[in-house]
Length: 405
Image (cartoon, rainbow, N blue to C red; front, side):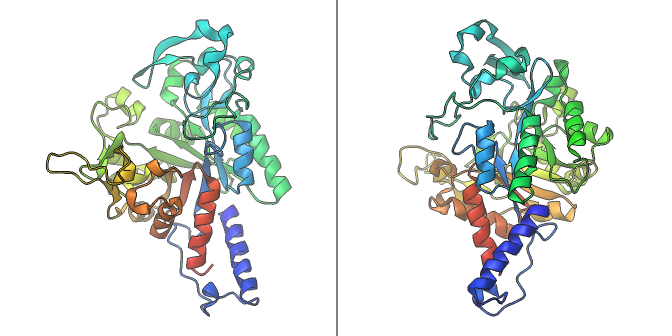
């Protein structure tokens, strides 16, 4: 792929200079580096999940600028619609989750309770605001452990503004930077009379990106959204996201109860299709995905399962002794064959979401987020979504060095 092949060459050149100008594996005399296990043999991509969301309020202009400065290959926006039909970068239609809308008295009367993909929510919803009104809001950090001093300072960005940004940064830096938009809650938006897909296609066409070699991937959790866009002539690479409800630490699997809205795509649920996301990960399911998409974007425990330890009474043990029981008390298990299975079906694998916080790392990574990246890189993953692109890039450099690049 465009960016990573360049990065890989730079890394190999640096290694050559360190070894007196000869391309050797770790200066050890091997000029035939180990082949990478990615589908196309290129180095894995680093996708800045919602921008540099580990450092700045997510999906703001400044968060995307910082992600690019950190070296991300792609920046990822979730797309929702304003009342006047403009695509903006927000993870949720409910603005209460990631903006300071609650502190704006002029919008107090717009608070309401409604259903989003079967989940009843109370808040302020983007579809009730014009773009001009949304531009008066500020983004806020959605994680209490992350910097809070920027809350309300940075504004919400439109998808067109993000496209313009990556084009300008690609020109000024000399490296190709891509975008990785998601159609967020597409059935919900369609039912509101604010469908996302045609507007997204129009922006992609105007950017000159309607091809499989363009610096863009388009993702969605709902197969019907991807199928519709393909049917409307979108030739850019499409990615089927694969969700799950929660970790099942007792069984070392992904928990997907029937009642959970995260267990199946909402378009399937609305149509009465009782299959779950896991149906997409079987050989038959992957073959079906291949008929309309170019890759899958699975939640990472589908690749590396995690399992907790339990006492005789069936209680999960607080392994790290911090008084909490969470992912940091669970240990990784034998990886699944998902990456190999997807590659066999001709699909790339871009997993989500990699983060630095200790509570979000399995116990046996010993607090080192790079250990998690290295594990999936060695398994042949094609790309990772990261809140901390700089950490992911450092881990990728270490991985490429160990393969002789």
